[in-house]
Length: 399
Image (cartoon, rainbow, N blue to C red; front, side):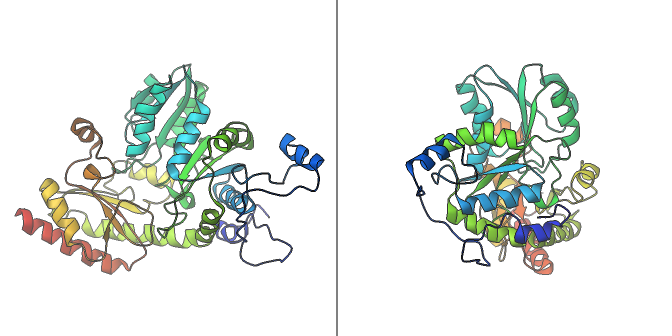
């Protein structure tokens, strides 16, 4: 396929492998294993001498291969490996890359499960992890050492929506020979230029915007061909974290519309942020696409947008937050994001509940903080819903 094609075209056609029946929609190959014409051919495939063919579903599958190729085309990567979930991608990428005695530097502001891997699993395996304030470049400079194997961060943090200067952190890491591994979920593959800006490995939870309709768990790791085939594939194949063929087919259908969905969601998020900014029920509104955001200019330079998520902090703490959530009529209470349906989450009691109170406070995850993933509903309907919920929170707390 021509490299000059635009992303919307690639997301409809890239990676398509048609069978002898020449089907329009991608085929779902639901098979565990494959038949060989001879014992010699079986040996060749296991030796890796018969490239482009498959030997076992955990190792590869035609439907999964189509999804991987399409994701690589969207991200501008040489190769990709699809996983069973977003956390399978994060944990797999980290554990496949580091070994006992290695050093990792990570941003503190991370999704709760990512923090668990870095705080619990890696140290348990002899890996030293240093945490920094991801927006403070001086801390990166001080923390990254000659023996640092990799740096890890979310390009936009969950749930406080801090934007990390990917290019400058990459310069610091590469000057010390360290890999740059980025969880890019909030940036989305539609707005991302992470590889171009210095990332070596980009990770997505495909559960989010890629599926985009609340159906499947999935993840994907993207990088150069050598890293995917030499580091990621052996680890994932032997530990069993591969994506299922049916999931890959659903993700392929999601990719056909991802640009239309994500751009519409980001446009609505910007309208909502503008409307709610300065609302009397809020102590703060956090949206990287709003000029009041501390990294607004960086977000524009890095992504050209503020993304699809907004966080708001209500006066009155948890009581106000719960009153707000319970008053919502269109927006759903759930802990997913990137869905066609708008979703509100209270991180302190859900996604980040395991963190000690002191750590939540340090990360800015207050009892009044709500993360809102903007869906595909009409912007006026969402604004009306948010405003009436804010009024209910004010009434409940007399603020």
